[in-house]
Length: 482
Image (cartoon, rainbow, N blue to C red; front, top):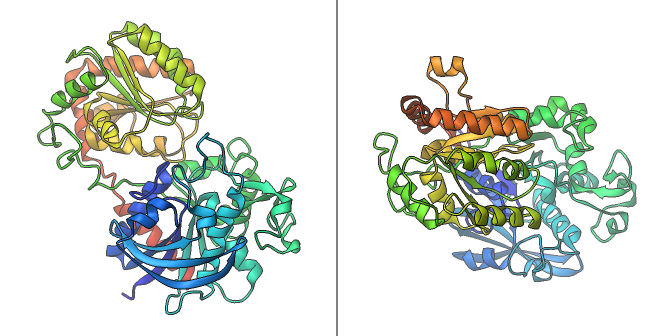
């Protein structure tokens, strides 16, 4: 089979630069597609961390003017990934978070910065790089969503574009005054162009002009094509229903493998899970909890926000602690939620522990040592922590929404009788719903045979990229043939 050459366009990519699940997908999908005859090269901004990670770098194209200054395109490899890197110091030579300054505010020129990412992708699609002509461009989220718009307004033959929406809540909206500076023509500022409620809508334009739109789970694809879930774009998405498909994310099962995970103090497998108890003790110690082997231990690895339902968990904590359960939380986010969980840790010493940061080894330890992993999101495009939890034997307790509903089988009576349950799925997504789910989880934990059966089912589940990568490869080939 003749290999397909695909250009992926992403604003972050694991393990080089990461703020969320987008990076995990951009980093893992190329390796999953390779056995299917799909070769992926990823275009990323030249952040300091990316430039420093390049094992070999060669200047393969010059860009005379990119948002006000010259730039270059570098080609190279890093962490096993084939990369094209935009070397534009005036846009990307900034430390830390790729989107926020040191005070946690959006960089004021984010519109120009990520328009540049999409513009360079379009230039590559139009022949910028000699002897590299991708058959298709796969653009990720609002930061790359102007790619098909640039191609459309440039005219001529262009490769098809797939746009993946990782989170519709982040849409990339910028003032109309940016139209000229980012190189879009005046005629593009219409309802049938990039205009969106009087502004330039990056994601809106991508949805309008992409040849196909994917989301990171089937349920999320259905949810966002409605007025309730569409966040202002539901009508447009419903109008493109024939081109909208949900493909459930996977995880890198080499990075997330409890039998080989060097970040764990004690490794284990589905066949030999006993060392989970030693990781549980290590986790309790790491968060200054009482080392009580039979206390139900709940874990959270999350951005702290209302979208993630962490305010619901804060309200449920008194009841959880009254049952003798424990909670460990790792993450950062809204200050008022951090303050609330910090106060809870003071109120329930030995039962609640928090680390307000993100640390990869601690995230792995939480998956390996928690009895249950909480994801009470009000909406969740896919979610990756519940997939990791399945792999590591932590029972996922999730809201019935998006990819959470698509990846966890609720322990209802029918599923328990059939022997297929993998977790606890709850609705409605409110205080009462979560409180009920926590009570169900604690009751299930105290039924040791049923709990072990759920752990075994979860650890045996296929959470890899294999099936989803095949669906992407099939979609690519369909669009290219069309």
